[in-house]
Length: 152
Image (tube, rainbow, N blue to C red; front, side):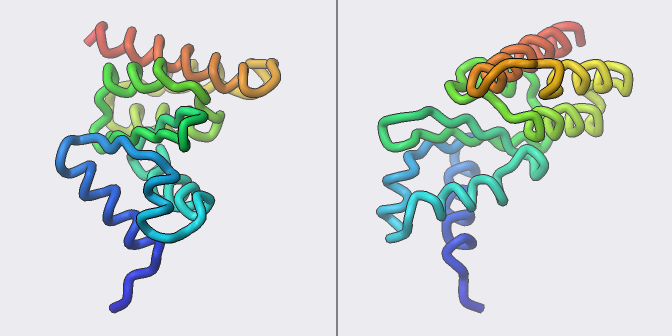
């Protein structure tokens, strides 16, 4: 069976995650290693390392597109909160909703807590232009996750 480029990149990142629990990489370096465009790296990150699939991805702008990925199969709330706080690009509504849903499914958040957080991160509630909206959403979600983790 022949691996696609996306499969090879995914395996590479998963191997990094297995070593230390998180992967820190630069898009440009990974693209150079696989002789592909950085947009192909973005595709793999968005489709295979999304919150819906159990990953938290934090991106820093500039300097080649630095990316940090953490697997959150069983969400570690303090770790997710710290990554969200460090994020320079924030988090989109869909990513925040996916994190909240995973925390609810794993038992970290009750149904009522999840609904409150879901309403808090909505685009129409955070009526700000981008990127401020995504940055504020990341800070709010980080604060809420940290508060929940300290209350357990």
